[in-house]
Length: 83
Image (cartoon, rainbow, N blue to C red; front, side, top):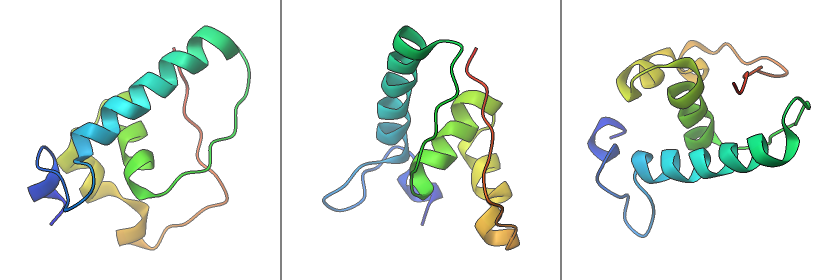
């Protein structure tokens, strides 16, 4: 179902590309206002996968495939570097 909703919106919701756009706007805000600072982000699945796409250069398909939820590889935090 994920792959079907990269550009097509979920019923009454967003597509993954919509989430990516929203997260990019948030990252731009962070860069403008908190450059060089550590920021904690609490999010659910789609925003975290969007961070993998935007900041780690993954495709959506790679992000879906590598998702820690599928591998049962939860950890207490992930680090993303905004350049």
